[in-house]
Every structure is written in structure tokens, then in C-alpha cells.
Image (cartoon, rainbow, N blue to C red; front, side, top):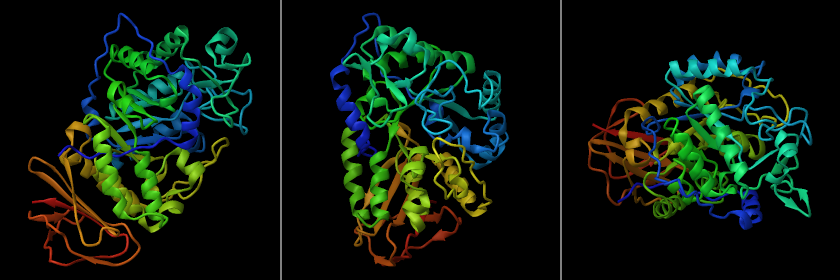
Length: 456
């Protein structure tokens, strides 16, 4: 059986935008380029990704202030630092007083609110010295309205009735780029190479990647890999992106399913079908990024507490133990329970939730120490187990060689008693306590209870 991965569905707003772009999502062939499916960098196989919201991370909101948190994040056990866009933010048509990170004013400069280019380079070097990898958020689909490209290369923008348009109706602070223009492609690739050469970053998270033609991403990936092997994460679900240019994509459908289960709109019985469907959609090399929250979910759809409540730990265990790469968003590790403002200053209040931090530290350690939990082709096979309580209990094993984990989740708010159709026969210890485990014929779980067992 191939490894299970998750089915992702694009956000409704992105689907609408993609339809608008269908007319220009044409394959542009570069005769001299021979594309080969890129190899996933070895350091991604057991990595945990951490999204950094520089503006809200500290009172100062600067690179230098964030750098003071690196030792804490190293202790936490995260590996890849994903920085939301660090370029200057456009002022024209700006939303709010500070604007959106994703309204880029200049692709090759640093937002002075965050610091200088020298500050960023120092931060990257310090992160590298501590063993982190660094990726930048890249916004290829659109620019801010006062980006210098609008003046110098007006022809690079999408027009209707001779007027430049926004990519989506309510994205009024950004202007849509036209990837049928070869000059735009060359400039964008050179700008992506700029940050690899100048700051030695390790890859990109690419915003609304499906709204940019796939063949552009192929060209960009080849160009970047010619400098150094990079890691590429698409904010998208389309399998063609990870089959050709990206290493990883978003597990949106897993998030939506977890939200529905927590809200009582669905049950744990929905999960096996999604995993089986995804297994037929994605190449084995594909890494699905599993998450409970990120900058969009937190600001627009609600905090983890709002959406999951007492079920959040069980779902966090799910994101760490099923195939893929888990994401931790700024503040998630200390129980951030506030919808951060998107266009204004709204500093994260760093509480001292030692129990939750210790919980994520344990999950990070399990991810690193157990090859069965690694991602893509490096991970273990997932076998979903059948129980007499499929609407409440989701159970599975992950196995690679002699390494096996048995995961048991009560994804309901009720006590449950159940039996397995076929009980795992190995001897196990509790991954959280280290104690030996003895299973009876009938098992009981408390509401929202989670268990991870390691084969002895």
C-alpha cells in the first residue's frame, strides 16, 4: 500500500480567481530548458515548519527583535522558519494603516519597518548557524499598486478595457500580473534568485501558486536549483504543481475536515475516504503541509480555540502523525487565543503555557526520532484500522522497517467504548509516558483523548 496523503481543495476565492486566469494559463515552452522533476532536499524529510509573522511577533516588530526568540524555537524543535513577505508594502490603495504583507512595493528590497538588508542577512546566518533553514513567502501573482513595475512595465499587468485589474474583486490593494509576458517571467525569476544569492535563503513558500502558470514555476525551480537545492512550498492543492515544480503543498482539505468534525458537521468516519482519495491524486514524493492554523486562518476564520476547543490537542497529534509536514504558526506553541489584526499592529502576547509548549516539544521530538513519521517517500506506510466506533475513533499505524507507531484518537466529545476488527499484535509503550501498554479486548477512551504508542 502506498503512503496516504491528504486531499486538498482550493479556497473558494482562489477558485474564482483561477477561472479568471484560465485564458492565460498557457504552457510556454523554453526550448533550451530540459525540466526534470526536482529532488526534495534531504533536510525536509523530518522537518517541522514554523511560520513567522514579523510584524506581530514582538513589540518592535523587527528582524533583530525576532532573533532573540531563536534559542526558544530551537528548544521547541522546529526546523524551517517561513517568513511572511519581508519586502516593502505598497502605500497606494493600502488596506488599514500598515497594509498587507502581500502588496509588494519592490521585490528586491526589505521593508524598513522590519530592519535593513544587513539585519536580515545577519538573521539568516544566525538561524543557519543554529541549524534552522529559512524560506521566504513569495508573491508572484500580483504587486502593490505603486510597485515600480507598473510605471516601467505597464504591459506586464492584466488589463480589461485597457485598465489594470485586481486578481480578485475584493483584493483592491493589489494589481494582477500577466504571465504571458516573457519579460515579467525573467524579472520574477531573477528576483527570486536575488534572495538566494544575497541572503542565502533555502527556498520559498509561494502565495496563491495555482493562480500563476505551472510552467513558470518549472522555469523558476530550475533556475533556483542551479544556485543551490531549495525547498518549495505551494499555497495550493493542485497535484500538477507538486508533480513538476514544488516539493510540498497545503493540506487544506484535512483542515476543513477537522474543522467540520470539531463543529459537529462531520465525524471521524470521514477521514479514511479522504486519505484514500489523496493517495490516488499525489505522487509519492509529495509532502502535504498539515496545519491547524496559519496567518489567514487565525485572522479571518478564528483561533484554534474558537474552531477546535478541547479537541485541539487530538487534532495536533493528527497533523504530526499522518503523512506530511506539520506547521506551527507564531504563538500556536503557547496557546495564542486572539485573532491577530492583518493590516494593523497587533503584538502577540506571549503567555507562559508551559504544558502546551511541552506538548509541542514532544511532538517535534517524535517527528524527528521516528522515520515512520517522516514525510514524502522517506516516511512510513499508513494503515487505517477499523473499529466498532468509526464515527468517534480514528486509529492507524505508521510503519517503516522496525519503526512503528500506533495512533489512537477519540475525535468526539463523548466517552467511547469499542473494539478493533483486527488488533495490532506488537508490544508497545506509551510515547508520552514511556510506560508499557497492555490492550484488552474492549477499549475505552475519554472525550478528545489521544494516544501514541511506540513499538518496543
